[in-house]
Amino acid sequence: MRILVVGAGAIGGYFGGRLLEKGENVTFLVRERRKKQLDTAGLVVESVHGNVTQAVHAITASESAGPFDLILLSTKAYHLEGAIESIHPYVGEDTMILPLLNGISHFTRLEEEFGKDKIIGGLCFLESTLDETGKVIQSSPRHDLVFGERIGKRSERISKIEEAFSGTNTGFRLSENINHEIWNKYLFISALSGITTLMRAPIGPIRETEIGESIIIQLLRELIAIMKRIDAPLAEDIETVQMNQINALAYPMKSSMQRDMEKLLPVEADHLHGYLLDIARREEISVPLLAAIYTNLKVYEQSLK
Image 1 (spheres, rainbow, N blue to C red):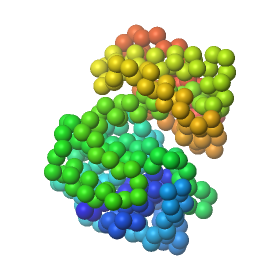
Image 2: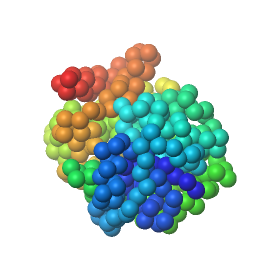
Image 3: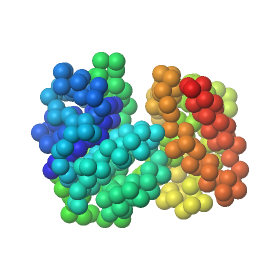
């Protein structure tokens, strides 16, 4: 299987590196500056699960490479349009596109561009970052990539992805209920990123304040109300399940969005919280805490200009 990983950053670099470590046929589509780094030093991953240093085949959008069997899309949401443009030459009749973005709205955009049948459901759980030298630094116990057919059944093509991913030093997993898992992740990441960016603090100090836990519960209830209004596939006990997950997080745990803010980087405000806020407005659902979170993020974005 010919695999194209779009980007060699914190996510694409990590999972692409694990595929290379196994011996899979992986190409990285990167910008010119990143290509020079990779050509000089290779792909370097420093991880609690074992380090990887690999020579890689990296291309830029100007290079011809023919169609790929699988395209792993690991960009941030605000780079989605650029990524779509860059991968067009590499999409063939049987190409599968596996996006690992947080949220849900990117699926609609990818379907509009490439057709519904080409888009595989996917998500990941990974805490990693790219340092100033180009190394991928991965520090979390979880390093999982979950994928599956969005129609909810095993197919011949999804079995080929499973075969390519099996045996890698990471938590690649085939799901036959990927839509459920995508929405659960969307709920979790929206709550965690929302509360940590609003409070400018890791989850531990927020939880231990007098009303911190009740504020997290309020946010979860607002988000759940929105998602259930549009019939998102959430379990009935999802509030309890997600609160248990949030309470189990390590005291110093920060969301990736909070880390991006600390580095004065762009954030996915519109893709995550703005998308849900638009639904709430349309459905006339009161969501004051979500509105405050979104406003906080937009004020931050204005400060970057």
